Amino acid sequence: MKLYKYSIQKLFLIAISISLLAVSCEENESGVNLGGLEALFTSEVVARDITFSNISNNATSYLWDFGNGTTSTVESPEVTFDNGTFTVRLTAFDDNGNSDTFEDTFTINCEASENIDPANGNLNWTFLSSDDATTFDAFGNTAGFVVLNPLQDAVNPSCSVQRYEKTPGCFTFAGLGQELNTALDFNDPAVSKIFTMKVFAETQITDVTLRLEFMPFPNVNPAFDRVASITQVGEWQELTFDFTGVTGTFKSMIIYFERNAPCDGDIYYFDDIIQL
Image (cartoon, rainbow, N blue to C red; front, top):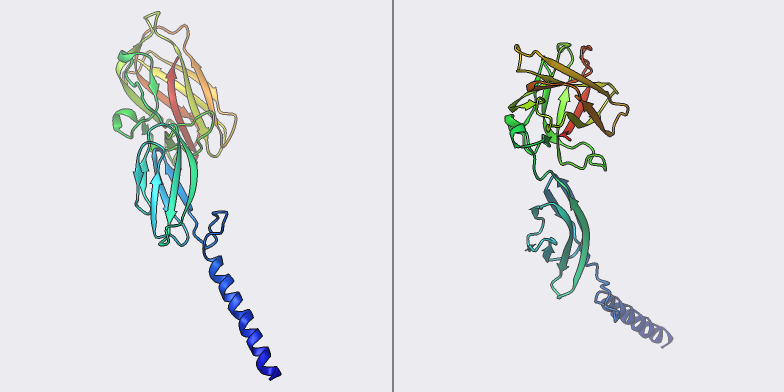
C-alpha cells in the first residue's frame, strides 16, 4: 500500500509538470511570447538596393513595412530605395495568431545628379553610371571602371566611384582621360578655374596630377598640370587643383596617379570631380 501511494503522488507531480510545460508555450499575462516566435532579418546593401534575408524563428507568415510607403508579404524581399533614411519593420506571425516584430534603420545617400558638360555649368562628375560617356578611359595598359564605393564615410558617402589599377607592366605614361562634350573656356572670367577631387589609395600614398589639354592626343598643346598629394592610405581625401592664372580652352581632361613611375599593381579610386 505504501508503494502504491508513492506512485500516485509521483504521477500527480508529473501531470503538474506537463501542465506547466504546456502553459509555457503560450503567451503569458504580460503579452510576452514564450513559445519561440521571433522576428529577425539581416540585410545586404548595394548602392540603392537592399536584399533582406528573413531569419525569423517559428513563423509562418510575414509582413514587411519598408518605411517608404510600401509593404510586402514576401519572405525575403529585395527593395530599391530613394535617398533618405528608412526604418524597415518586419512582423512575423505564427499559426496561433501570435506576432513579433523586428526593425532596423537604413540611410541611402547615393548620387542624385551630375554634370559632365561645361556647357551646362560647372562640372560635377559623380559617376552615376558606368556608361562610356561618364567614365574616364584608362590608357597605357591600365584598367579603369566604375565600382561600388569601397568605403562610404563622411568625406565620400557616394555609392559609385571609379577604380583605377596600374596593372603590373603597364607603360609609365599611363593614366585616365576623357574628352569633354564642350571645352572648358578659361578665357571667360566667370568660369571657375578651381577643381576638387576625392581620392582613395588602397596600397600607397602618391601624387595625383590633373591635366587640362587643348584637345585630346595628339593635338594637346597648350596643356597645364596641377599636382596634389594623397597623404593617407585606406581613407578618402579631397584634393584641390587650382588653375588660377591659366587662359585658353580645354577639351581634354587627364588624371595621373603616380605619374611616370613603374606600374606595380597599385589601386586607386576617385570620385566627385567638382568645378567650384
